[in-house]
Image (cartoon, rainbow, N blue to C red):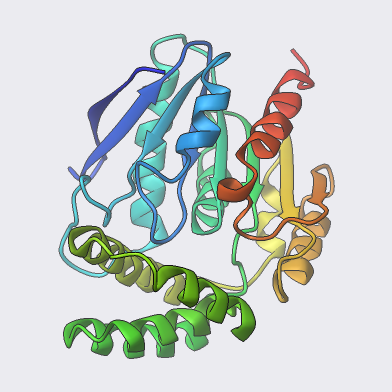
Length: 276
């Protein structure tokens, strides 16, 4: 399906590149750490038959701007508010906001701060446990490794943040060994991760704060995702008692890549069942 890219300017002047495809009620898909315009591509193709899909590259991730200084969730909340306003403008209809991983945490922040343009919220496995002092220490480790271009040490620091089990890390490493990495893409991802860690380090692990969210909410998770994600998702379901929680058997934190049709179908069903 045809798509086109355009720029949106955030309140502080940051330029965000957004990819658009499809027609219908607007949906904004927010990518996780290490991602970009491509992250939701296959899910977006499924949704675009009935929705206008907006795929922003978050600040810190080219081709969007990489502003100087330390990033915060307040910065990115301003960005996403600008994207939501732009997505609402063509039809006048409020937006279905969807986030995965770090993008899900950002979607929670944005909806809690300013839900005016949000029709519904769907979040897949936000790493709400990865915040505060412990993440700040890992940020320092990652930054030092980044500055000396030590890819192995950067990966080790990120494993400390994501807490992916060693056997899964080994399998992913073995799979990647057969591929030649694109140095430009690797650098873009590394820069984005650095700034995401800055925001996470300045955030809180308080899950109860999301109880202020009142828009229709769908929580999505994989039954095979490692702890502490399952515990985190149960706490989030408690904090937002009106939310629906769907757990996919046989799926993990990589479901947007491994089973995009499953994700798209769940989102379409959720959107269709919302009250008029």
